[in-house]
Image 1 (cartoon, rainbow, N blue to C red):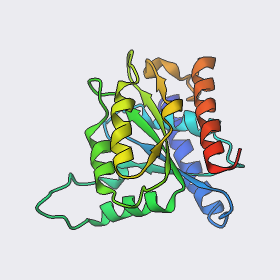
Image 2 (tube, helix red, strand yellow):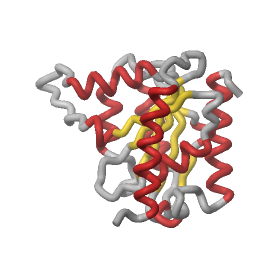
Image 3 (spheres, one colour):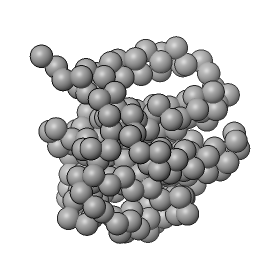
Image 4 (tube, rainbow, N blue to C red):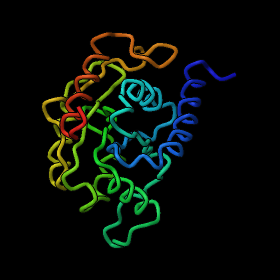
Amino acid sequence: MLSKKLFFVCAFFYAHAIAIDNNASDSKKPTVLLVLGSVREGRMADPLAQAVHALIDTSKINVRIADLKQYNLPFINLEDPVRTESMNQWANDVKSADALILLVPNYNNGYSAVLKNAIDVLNHEGHNKFVALIGYAGGYVSENPLKTLVPTLESIGMRPLVNSLVVIQFITSALDEFNRFKKVEDRQTIENLLRDLYNRLGVA
């Protein structure tokens, strides 16, 4: 039997897929890509994505899920610079978005290799796009993984919101059974980040 948390994650992604179809003609609002930066089994990126999505004002922006696990990007081979179909899909999705929200797992005080690889796939597609960064970990974590990610994003012309970095500590206990933030402080830091993003996109 599915746990309640897994059930709500599955329901969230199903409802989101329907929402994409329903909002396909809504071209007036900016589109933001919510990127899941982990591919591990049992990852917390799924419930975290649901918790973050619930706080987004969808009257201001369209949201699309970009799950690196679903793209299944190959690690870049410098001897074969030709992009695969999955690499092209990822690059095109980034290009078509107005901004990104990256969910960044903490691995040994750094960010994930799959996220670095996904960024390395990009050339001009991310140029001048705002990037909101949300780090998370199973225990205590500093902003270091996000701060090391910032220059990587800037090197391809992206514009990370460096004054609104968010880190969710002890992620496994930070969400309730409905995948909502338990702590007011966590919810408020996400909301502040989103307000910063709305301002940058001109939809505040």
